[in-house]
Amino acid sequence: MQELTYEDIRKLAIKEGVKDTKLHIGLWASDRYVKTRKGIKGKRCTVYYPFNKAVPLKDLF
Picture 1 (tube, helix red, strand yellow):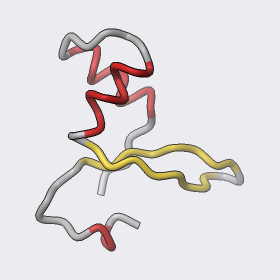
Picture 2 (picture 1 turned 90 degrees about the vertical axis):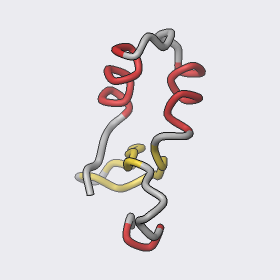
Picture 3 (picture 1 turned 180 degrees about the vertical axis):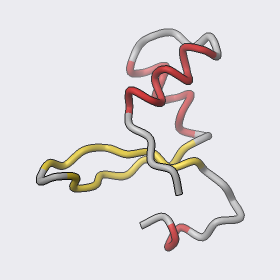
């Protein structure tokens, strides 16, 4: 499962013509990606997983 950061999501959203604000990018991503917080190298950060109804949520974590 591919993990994406906010910066990755931001680049994809801007390419599709979404305004460059956290609100607009978050709304755009809400129906395409599952957002979760994860510890990476001792820091908590937000990661996004592509949303696919065929994949059970237990497989994302």
